[in-house]
Image (tube, rainbow, N blue to C red; front, side, top):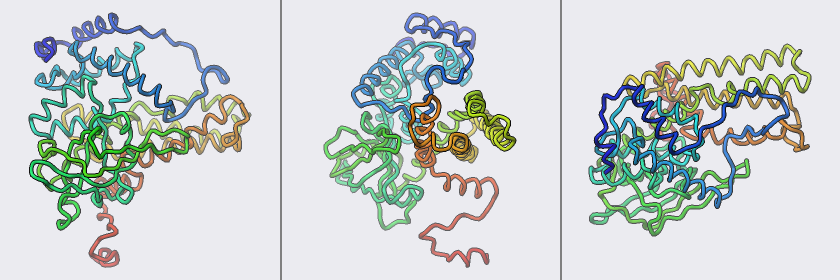
Length: 427
């Protein structure tokens, strides 16, 4: 274990910590040049896509660079700032973590998006539900960037109704044999481990017969196939399991108690997605681009266009402040709640509102590439948003959660509900 990480003093002041971080960054990365140039229509890149589409060879090269940077951070005691010293963390506060992120953003570093799912969703679940040996083995490696994790929940017949999943795990002595299929798995093609939820008892109610596991993505019987998106890229995958053997030591939580494991991951997933929107998201940060888009096409004097543009701005501002309340709750040590569902739903609805506004201004230019700057490039956002409406829970599921947990409405009857809907209304 890294001595510097182990010997760190947990009560180091934020200012002293910033000095340490700056010294590390100055020695290992190149500072970004100050970008004070105002946005000018027609200059620079007009890319507004949600997902960066790159070929697999370049992707693997970028992953290697990202892992090298992650290792430098970890070895300097900066890989898991709020984490336990047992796993190479510093046990510092969220304020220290935010200070690091703020300083690092001023330097040119490799893309760290490869670790978003593993560190934002899988690692917290391992920390809460895995055996001690698995925690000791995997957590330091994940935060050092030695291994990358993915999350495998959704299936072709179990997306919004996650508890209806059919991938099975059958016990065979000290191992489990997994058979089935998962779908929409981001990063499965470059991941080393994956968190999976399987059905382990078909005779129990569907929420009760589930168990979580950590699977070696390179194990015999695991097959990853890319899924081509409307954008032309393949960020998502389907994963097939044929007689894949998983040690019982890599089980997450108790047998048939996988629903609580899944909830831990899902709440961290929505927190991660919501946090990504806390700064206002693409729409708010690009309000100048939208203003100049309107002006370029001579619609800036149209009162209806001006009203819709203001609606885009206002809704992103409201989401920003709502999300900030949720982030403050987490920073105060409280568990994320339905606020994360609000953040997720707000993000996708605001992105949809943005692209609908742009479409109304551009007309057919958004669908036909005439080579004009700032027009067809919006097509990538248009085609990418449907994936966001599914990722981290569909919009419909988010609405149900908000209705039930915030508004106190009756639980939405599932397709397998035993009580007829009309009878529920009578009660």
